[in-house]
Image 1: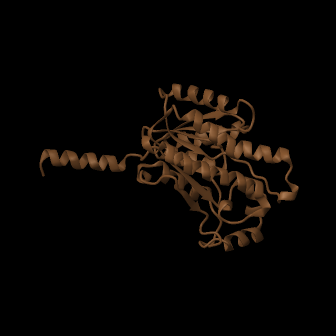
Image 2: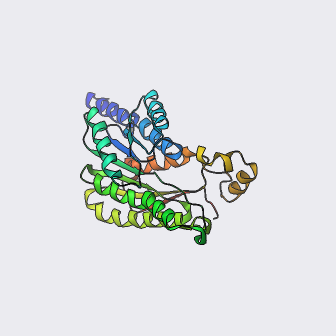
Image 3: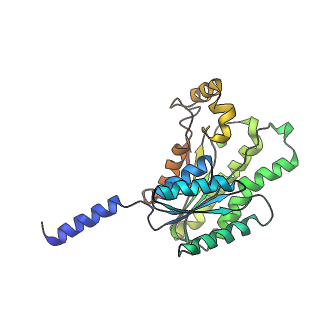
Length: 271
């Protein structure tokens, strides 16, 4: 084999072995716990510098950052309570400061994962609750992306974490479902607008996922586990890594030809 061919072969092997997101920067909202923590860890493992956003649990954010760094990645925490006046300003001030510490100024990946639930049927939803769930789940992602666009490099990725409740009628959480429906429409329209820059915009729709926040009613409840497992074609409830791996795919170059898509990650619930 010629020297040129050998060099090319080694270069190809090195590229294949390199982390998929090496040299990339990522913002993960709600990145300190549950699905967000799994996403932060996965993107960090894939080579991205991860800004781990959190609302109030600083300890959880630091634990997530430590988990990323102990695995050989790079991460830093960013605090901002979404749904409050000035939330996006605080988020991007902290983001800019963290990026500067690593000699970075731009973004490659934005994951809008932060969200709150509201498990009530329509007759029990109060106006203040409605406003709050929309403020966090729909308004915040909208203005986070608006602020991120000047920082987002061409060829970047936006991934919005939606929910299976936009496909499966779930009146027990009707206002929450409406916020995720709004996020899906936002995803579709944004993908059309940003396509000229090579930026892809996609959504991921989890079903029931075994996270700490669901531990009381799901993880420690055999009956609930059996019920929700039975609704999934794959016969179990989701795990945070299931969603993180899906997000990582959409954030990678492997998904370069996928945009404006809502990727169902419910394990085939209620097919």
